[in-house]
Amino acid sequence: MSRQNFIVRAVADNWHGNLSNDEEFHLPSIEAISDLIGLLNANDRTIISLSGRNGSSLTIGGGSDQYIVFASTPDENLWNLTSERIETEKNIVLKIGGQEGDFSPREVVDRKTVDDAVRSFFVDGRLQPSSRWEKPA
Image (cartoon, rainbow, N blue to C red; front, side):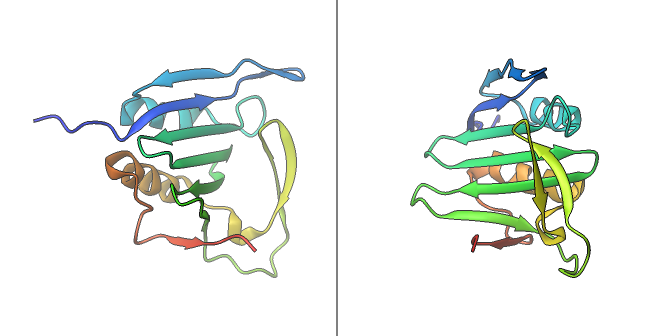
């Protein structure tokens, strides 16, 4: 028996100079989402937004095994996926949404952490319980 996809829409940017030709996918498969994440390169492909059936969303930005992930829930709470990196490390510069940003090392996660978060969200819209989620300051 096939389980219904919780994610109803995925939007991925695709920059050409200073304009993005966003690509939209309805009811994307987990494989299609994984392929989109694989295209992220923090250059011309910098962000993917996944929208859930209940109004929640999961957004992944960056690329090359350095990603920023944040989620919003139906009750309008925001959550950042965090790593165990030490705050005293140098900040990491990533292009996300077409703009460079300076991120704390704790805000930057690897591909495996992203994949775990996406799989959990794909199934039922929940934040991966074994991952570290924090409310932004």
